[in-house]
Image (cartoon, rainbow, N blue to C red; front, side, top):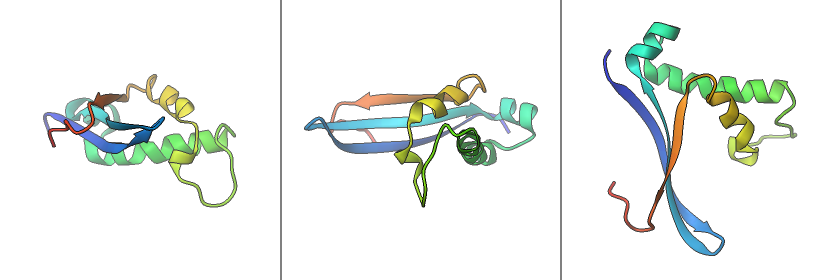
Length: 101
């Protein structure tokens, strides 16, 4: 496998009373992921999210009772784990209404 895989979410909404549009994404190189982990990029991109979340729950960084979604937790500890592990992620601000896709 050669190339890059990108997983992202295009979000539109209102923040502080103003329209806001962003694209948050995670990018990886297929050859790098296969060499380091022996996995295809899609499998790796799917699995690491759950592993990072379990690590934060096990360490007590994320806490709560009942059913909760990842969006209910502070994202900073999650992102801090991704950086040292070489998981490229970024957010692009899009002027509202100017998305091309």
